[in-house]
Length: 398
Figure 1 (cartoon, one colour):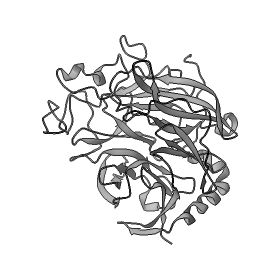
Figure 2: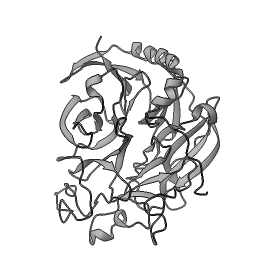
Figure 3: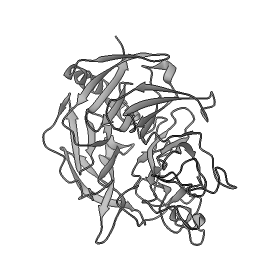
């Protein structure tokens, strides 16, 4: 593929949330979403600034990993074992979507993220990320295909990571920014953090371990990527020194690219990802090794390595994340919502006025199930994909 691919026009809202897309048929989407809330009795909660209720959107899903919306109001949900499902008018359709590639559903592998193209209305393209089975390995891969008549066709691979490792830390989040560039998170594939830490794969630009990737929508490499033309560096790399970025979103006000990163035993992070930056893993950090808690890092800071905007000790086991930009919860606009698999919690992180640093954290929900993804829906409500309760909808209390 060439560097000359035209970037798609993209509006201010992140395609990762699919807000701009779903607004094309907002009335249809809201009608369908309203039907979701009658499936289960709501539970009411209070927070520092908003009261809200929680209702069930869809049940009967097996490890729902991600969700998104199409302009007609349909919700697409990935199941990690390898199925793409449709929720239509409040009902989970029985048949999975045809045309989804085979996935490596071993360990932490499987089907990960789903995302419509910013111009889905005209091109019908949907993107999927997954762990692809190889003869002796597996690796993070992104495909796109035409989604029509509830099936996927004309599937093409637009990115396959050059990684090696165990059956874990695949990353797998995908997002379009406001200029139409596609970002992909890649984990370190559980490469052991031992010996010469500067020689760890996450510090080596000759592979994709522990990186965030930036591409044009067709998979070609933007000519202004930070390592284009650098000898020994893969040109797709946008940032490096990551452990396992599990969530990613574009800030709806500042346009910054944010990730949350699953650390070791302690040291989960929130980061603003910027071109060419090194985020330090495993040379610096705030965690220790699993088990006896032996040290990993030589320091918590290092020259030329970025500090997180927020970190957690002990670890919360971060999952999907979202930055709220809607109108249903005006006092939450610009706040970061992070899934905590430990404790099955939903956390809200309040940012400073410039949207750059965390100033306060609040636990909104406890014990709701292991969270995999969080999204703002086209109706402005917050949707949560959980392993054992399906998809939940968080909306203002009536």
